[in-house]
Image 1 (cartoon, rainbow, N blue to C red):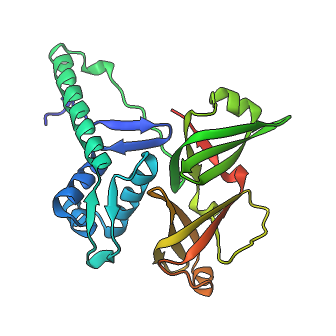
Image 2: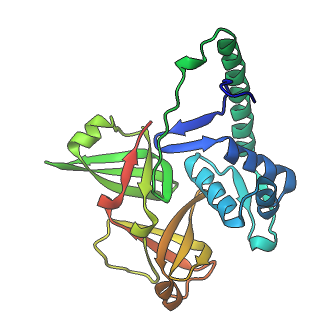
Image 3: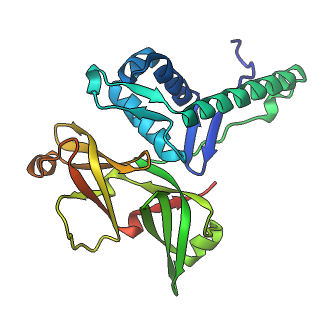
Length: 258
């Protein structure tokens, strides 16, 4: 491609969450190869990076795009769901239309009219949902976001923020939660000050020198990632399949809208 030539690379955005060409290509590779590890290799990604991208995609859509069976780096079957196929097809159609439109603009010398805006977040968890209820207070309001059947995430926002975001029951929003804000506990009848108690099962655990990343399957194709000390993960003996409760304080949940 010549310098200065106008090109198109579609990024679909919903609030703070973005889906770009790289992740769509990963979904296609999984569909063709039937394996996350093989798809990761084709796309030049580590197995962990591919898993993270797939979990993020499944969290952002109303139904999982990819369903995978346990198998780790050595294998494990994976398939693209019908919802995933729809998303890929729609993305490719829009990409082709945009490229065609930009080609016409370039022919007319209009490429200097375009510039790129990006929105990024350091939050490890970005879960799309629908506002289930809003409980207003004198200063702050409690907003419950339904992210899957039987799974709600509660956030505390100022009343002004609720108004500025135009939040209302039934409207979509995205919950942003840093993985370090997610505490994990085992056992029943837990009594804590955390507003959110989200039940799940350990889907993956990655140990580092100091910390461990634990990914929970919370249902509906959604996952929640926590970063805990390696000492804690070892002491609590987190293993794939274990029932674990994620504890999140409501003020630690940030809501974003389109």
